[in-house]
Length: 64
Image (cartoon, rainbow, N blue to C red; front, side):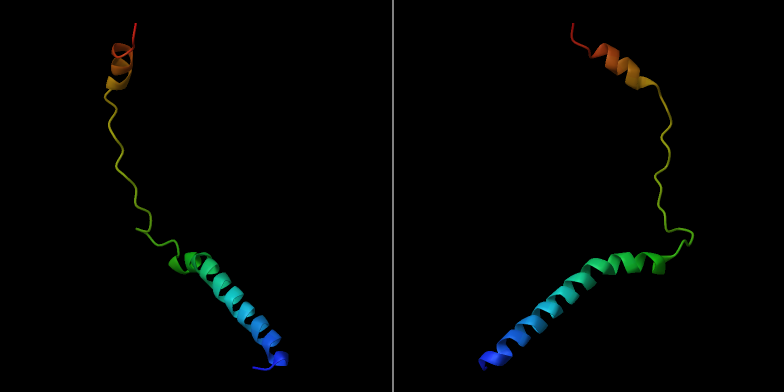
């Protein structure tokens, strides 16, 4: 390669790297609207029944 073509090739290479890096970072952002708000997209855990044993354990395990 001659001296005159080395600098433009470095610039093109740098621009390609920046474009690839930007695409990798932006892919999840652009994928979210594609998923949509369909039913079943949110998974929730079942609610636990309150048994009231937490306060009893807290009081009974305190050091005196």
